[in-house]
Amino acid sequence: MERIQEEFQVFDREGGDPVGAVRQVMANQLVIYVENAGDFEVPLAMVTAVHDGKVVLDAARLDPRLSDAIRRARQAEDPRIS
Image 1: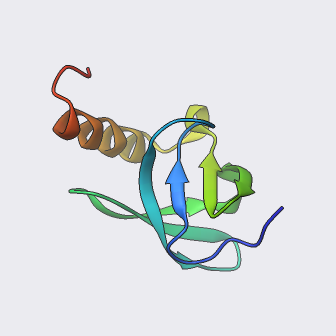
Image 2: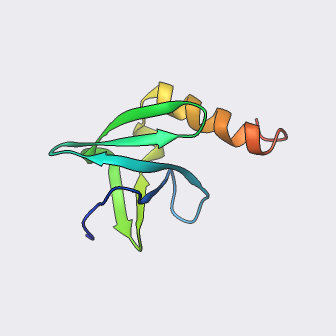
């Protein structure tokens, strides 16, 4: 796996749209920023892939607060999304 770096884009699924960006990389977790929601700590165990400056998370295992923030960010971009 490519080494995760600050400013990598974060995705909740492969091939999807970015949901945030890496703010900080720590020993066992990442801090990611989600637009209009702020920073979230995500355990590295939630990372399923790292490539091409992208971090892909396991959407099924995300904290409900983070999942909700991602959904709200998407709705702000496209109100048709529920």
